[in-house]
Length: 83
Image (cartoon, rainbow, N blue to C red):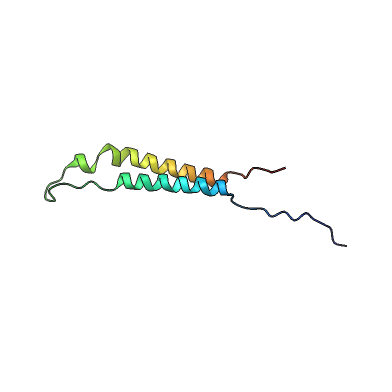
């Protein structure tokens, strides 16, 4: 008395999901690179223009959040149904 059920394997992530995850990871890494770096020419002096630059304080965090949003999209993206 066994019922014949179709053998459907549910795949959690597809190739497209992994592609978006890789893109998100690259964007997050780019944000981290933008946030790092920048040192003073003379270690005995403090230059706030280098430490508190617009790139490090504003642009880099926005890029990182954008990368995390791409990651969320990649995780929740449903695979296309093939009929």
